[in-house]
Image (cartoon, rainbow, N blue to C red):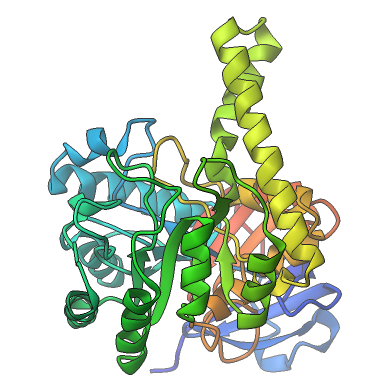
Length: 421
């Protein structure tokens, strides 16, 4: 039996490689892979019939979210309150979350921490077709110091040998990558301003993961943790706040230059610093004046976001643009699913061009996550993962929010209007 063929005609095609969009383009997907891309006038005769007409839309590679927590709730509760729910309730939340993220255009997502076997089970359910969701890259349980950030997920490890055992156990269970908590975080009793592991501890995680063909990403809010992660040659840093021991984030030129020299990727999770709160309070302020407490909360959140954008801008000036990848941290606190658009808009505010921001969520993220042979760009031989939007996001990144349709592996998984033939 021949493989099914899907042909789409689009007004413009952004392939993720960084070049100018192709206007009036056709994308042909045979089976689950892209077979041909080019101008409509040059489409081969065998693929010129039954073309789906999205000629008013722009096609991009499916987005890649490099940092999610699919089994958390994004409902504003603390980690401790969320951890009080059962694995069954978390699984039901994940069923909602994966669908929400997929229909927003995220076709690949890297889950950076779930309790017990939830991460693996969510991925299995999507792979078997029980759930509609992005292609999942899962860490399973994040490795953390005893009582450390996310300790309630169930993978505490103290010392090099215990860390090696954790890496081996997680990979045997199906981990696509390793997540290690190199500093404290929002978990009660942990300190985000201090490192949790030594350089040799982190190096043990890296060496063991590398032997097993896995990448390592590290939760690092403290500058000390960032420096140690870079020295241990970890592949990626999450958040990267440059927090000093007094709790104040201070961009450090020497630390940043070492990151650039080492080729470390940064997943800055920009919207996770209060963007949902900012949008909610700004909307309320448009209706009536805010109460003093809400006005102060809005100002605080805007100040934090401003500092984060300045930090990313400094990294861009150091030439780190192709190593900064888009990520949401969706699931934690009130960090919403379905809104990679927030992060792309913030990256543009930080100094990226719209095209750079698109590539941070496609090509660069695919490379950082080790899946660039399959996803991240629209090229023959890669999965037919596509986001179609109305408008031109290379001119106005806000157009990324105008989702028309989403294809995963060549299959239409969401359509807001429907094509014509």
